Length: 59
View 1 (spheres, rainbow, N blue to C red):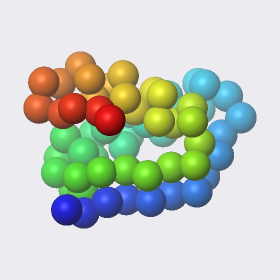
View 2: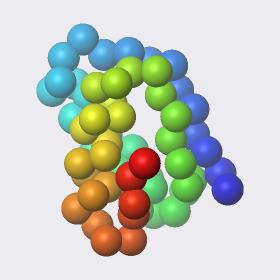
View 3: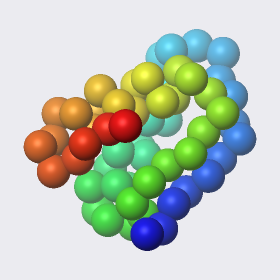
């Protein structure tokens, strides 16, 4: 498995939604299999983007 890990932390939900959308697109493209972040806002937004696709199961 290939995981991407980043330590970026955003101030607003809007910033995280844009960031999470780009991460979801990279995961749809199978560039990596998982994503690790310290920012709970990114994890929150990314889980909703990934849950829209039945191929992904957010944990």
